[in-house]
Image 1 (cartoon, rainbow, N blue to C red):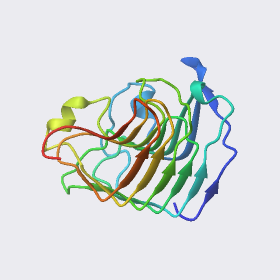
Image 2 (image 1 turned 60 degrees about the vertical axis):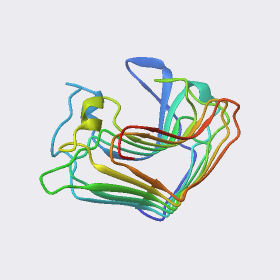
Image 3 (image 1 turned 180 degrees about the vertical axis):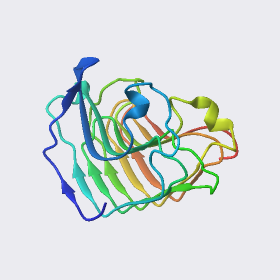
Image 4 (image 1 turned 60 degrees about the horizontal axis):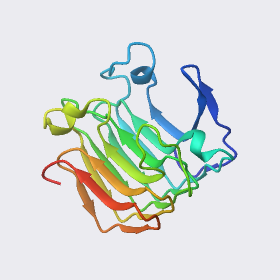
Length: 203
């Protein structure tokens, strides 16, 4: 998915949360983990994933009521992913979000590199009050995977430029063991913001 200009994305409402709008720029994965059984579906999304050189503006008139992801990758198995050189602006939740992706027997990795992010000034305080955020990677629905080397996929976060403008924003949030976060330029403007927040061991 490369070289696209994405703007004017109108939020739509989930049946179970009509008060919250959903807004995605690029989504790779399966909706099965958050619909139907609510369980991870092994092997539903596999292979090589490249998301590069896209320009995404997720401006919305209701940022505090919009669950937004500029680039959203989740529920995959053993992917070899590179998310690189994308520009993401005005996203009201997580500009790049890679959550609950798993190893396969052949391994797998996720590299987030050389992206330019400027968040919205406000965001939806769901599922946590930290918002809006730059890059969020690791495990949310299945936190046990974050500490299991047989299941967690390696996350590498390199050379990104992140400017967060929210009061409680996180520039780079890593919620897994064994991640590498190196040579990023993170600027936070909010009085309660975190530039880099790493939760896990051997990071």
